[in-house]
Image 1 (cartoon, rainbow, N blue to C red):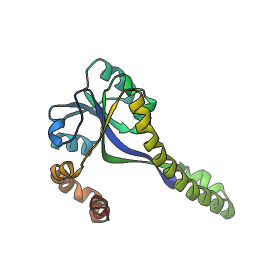
Image 2: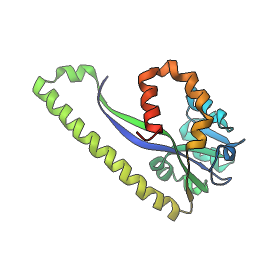
Image 3: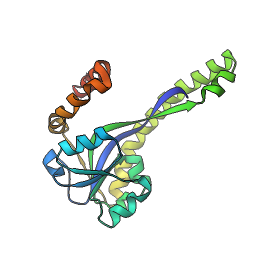
Image 4: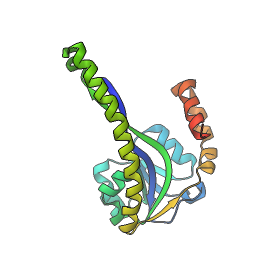
Amino acid sequence: MKILSWWENGFRHVTNNRGPITSPEDLAGLKIRVTPDKMRLDTFTALGASPAPLSFGELYSALQQGVFDAQENPLAIIYSSSFSEVQDYVSLTGHVWAPACLTMSNFSWNQLSADDQTAVQQSADVWRDKQRAMTQQDDAELVAKLEAAGMKVNEVDTAPFNAQVQGVWAEYADVFGPELMGLVEQYRKGE
């Protein structure tokens, strides 16, 4: 596969029925559906939650039936999946940035002329920036839509959460390498 550009789905946030998540203590014992990603499972465990994977197709009913107390997804997915019908609170934790990539097969890419490759890549670069801007604009509008649908939305000071997951970051530092971990640290510090 040829990655033409990195797009985004926005930051992931936590929804639940218990109350606003304002500190790691608010996650204590909360059964939360997460993607089957070991680092995500380890992160929510370090924050005191009880994370477990579940296929996305089963999530709405699992929340509706109380099998899970909470879930985490970008605002666009929270809204489009009508989680406001089965969850009362959205806490803007922004704990994971959800990238998406625009790809095409290497076979197809290699069939294009050099001029066509340049044109496709230039278009991918333009739409990368437009798509990211649209996602960020949509997030602001989605907060209002989720509130209008009855959800209570709260901002979150992420510093206490960051402090509590330092051990997880240290555990995965060798997996992701110093360059990527340095970028994460710069972002965390607002640089």
